[in-house]
Each structure stands twice: as structure tokens, then as C-alpha cells.
Image 1 (tube, rainbow, N blue to C red):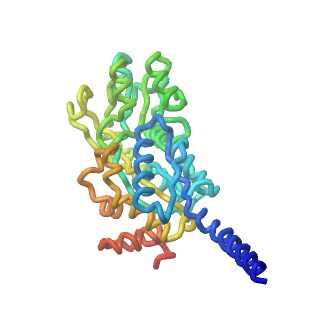
Image 2 (cartoon, helix red, strand yellow; image 1 turned 180 degrees about the horizontal axis):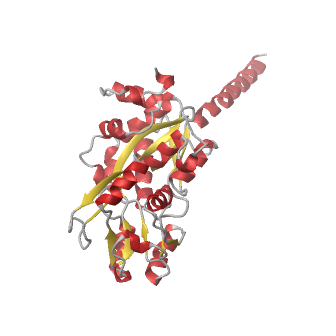
Image 3 (cartoon, rainbow, N blue to C red; image 1 turned 30 degrees about the vertical axis):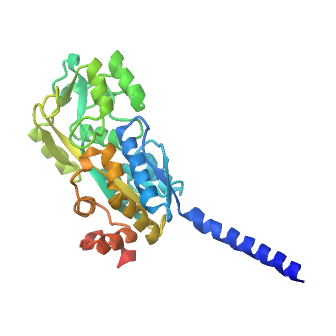
Amino acid sequence: MKRRCLLIGSVAAGAAVSIRRPAMAQARIAYGTTNPQSSVYTYAVAAAKAINTVSGSDVSVTVLATGGAIDNLVRLSRGQIQLGLGNMAAVYQAYRGLEQFEGRAMPKLRGLWLYQTSIEPYIVRADSNIQTLEQLNGRPWTAGQRGSATEALVMRTLDVLDIKPNYYRASLADAVEAIKNGRSLGYAKAMAGRSLDAATMELALTTPIRVLSFTPAQIERIRAALPYLSFITVRDGAIPGINGFTTWAASSGHYTYSDSMNDAQVAAILRGIVDGRSHQEEVWPVMRGTDIIQDTIEGMNIPLHAGAVRFFRSRGYTVPDALVPPEAR
């Protein structure tokens, strides 16, 4: 009888373990990022490292290479990822059902944290003789990585200005190669803060480039049509070897669905990001000296996840009513 009891106890213990395993699996977070050749991917890997180092007992984040924000939004809606990275203008459009998301609003989208405001320069080969945006008309040019939020927004801005390049749609690697061999005369790309990223600076070493600038009249037209875009002027020489220019900038950040993660999982992720910032700063210097929580509160354009609201408040921050989702009221 004693032996039988032991066996029953062992089976019960095994059953308890099997019952607990699904709960552990729910803490495994699939993190949709971008193309591995993008410098942003480097940040994503560092962010995952920060989360797993600080909050590894609560969540385990796995980085997935994807096509960027639009791809991540699709994957999030299908439950293939729980955490996405991308351009917040595209996220705003998806949340509101605007532009390419007309009739397909994603009201369950919730914000988590922002990690930068980045310029989106429109670059051309210096020997192309293209000096203005209008001169892109009919010329082979890449609007951004195929399928990315950058590509969609760049095309939209040029549509507003009635400028129609002969778009060369490609992956980042193919776009760079096309610029080098002249099949494409340039590209637009999300950068790291107010600097050009490593891929673009490496391109400039072998293929001199120029950055096109938006005029005040063009900016006025775009602001009227796309109110979620802001513009930044980079002075001449601020980026070594590159001319001064004015272009639009976008906040980049992270998002989820209201029901993709629970409050405790979100809090664990944000604890890793805020308390593990050194891991991120090593590869993403533009984060140094920033206040991640305050920058997120000031720049987020969709409601926060309820877990983010509670986490930010626990750290002593005031969350504006506009960022508090219905489920956290």
C-alpha cells in the first residue's frame, strides 16, 4: 500500500508539473523585430538581453527577424508574436484604421516603450545630379525595405507631393547593391536618432551620397495630409561628410495587443528595459542620458498597455488620461 501511495504521489506530482508547464510557456515572448542587416536589429537583440537578464525569472524573450513594423503588426494580429517593434506612425495608422489600414483598424493595439526618434532621410547617389525631391520623378529609387513601414510612409509623402519615382522595391541588402551598381539611384531608410546608420555610412565610403531636403512648402502640404509626422533639420556638417537637410522624423517603439500579454509580463519586460538600460546603451548610444519612461509618456501616440500604466505609476510617473486604455480605468 505504501508503494502504491508513493506511485500515486509521483503521478500526481508529474501531473502537477504538466499542469504548470503551459503557464511557463505563456511567459515565453516572441519579439518581432526587423531585418538582421538593420542597425535596429542590433538594438532589438540588446533589448531582449536586458529583459532576459533583469526579468528572466518571469519572461523569456526570443528575437525574431521580420520585415519590420507592418509585418510585425500582421504577426501580432495572428498571435504569432506578443511584442513588436516598429515605426509608431504606422502603428498609429493601424490603431485608427487610416491609410493602408482603412477598414482594418486594430483597436487592441497598446504601447509599451519608445526607444528613439529617428530621421528618415531620402538619399541619392551624389553623381545622379538629383538635387530636389521633384527630380526623383520617373527615376529608379527605393522607398525603403520592401514591405516595411518606412517604404509605406515614404511612398505616401511623395504621393502627397505628386512625386512618382520608378520605385525599385527590394530588401535592404538588394537596395544597397542596386545603388552601388546604379540600378537604383538611392533609398530612404529609418536611421538611428539624428545620424546615418552603419549600413548607409558604409555605402557612402564607396558610393558618395547626397541627402535631399524638404522645402517649407512641401512640409506644409505633408503636415496637412499626415499630421502624425514631424520634421527635423540637420545642419550642414553635423553628420561628417553629409550636407545639411530637413526631413521628417518618426518615433520608434514597441507595441502589443491588450490581450497578448498580461500585466505582470508587461511589467517584467519594462523592468528589464528600464533597469537594464546599460545593455541597450552599449549598442544604441542615442539612449544615453534619456528618460525612457518620460520619453514614452510624452511621445506615445496610442494607449499604453494596462501593465505599462501600472508599471510607470509604480515608478512615480503620471500617466495622461489619453494614454490610459479602457481596461485600466
